[in-house]
Image 1 (tube, rainbow, N blue to C red):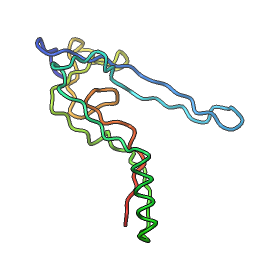
Image 2: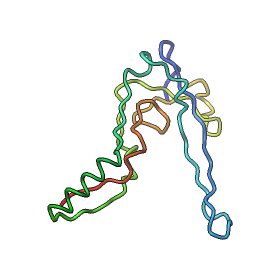
Image 3: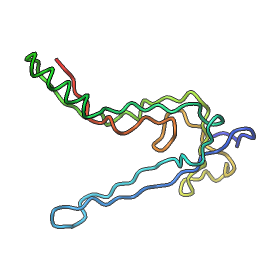
Length: 134
């Protein structure tokens, strides 16, 4: 928590809620995700460039055919913690969520150390399945 900066913009945020249904349409899981609203970021002020590595199906097909022709074995894994390691180069400030405002610091904002879903600087979600060639 830091005092609101005068020269930097502050990104707003929101909660996304989702209900995962089972086969019988009953509620199986309740999920919540805290995301930043990227439309409140300004290019050249809050970020300089956007880069998010995403795998293409043609690349995956090429790797699979190459591994098959060479007799290599393939293993797949899910990368679920990519956002936990996304460092920020810029200073990004986030409004305090209404539900979690610190009573004695209501005018303060959160200074982010790591990327958050929804930021322009956050990596893309397209690379969740990763193929490793052994």
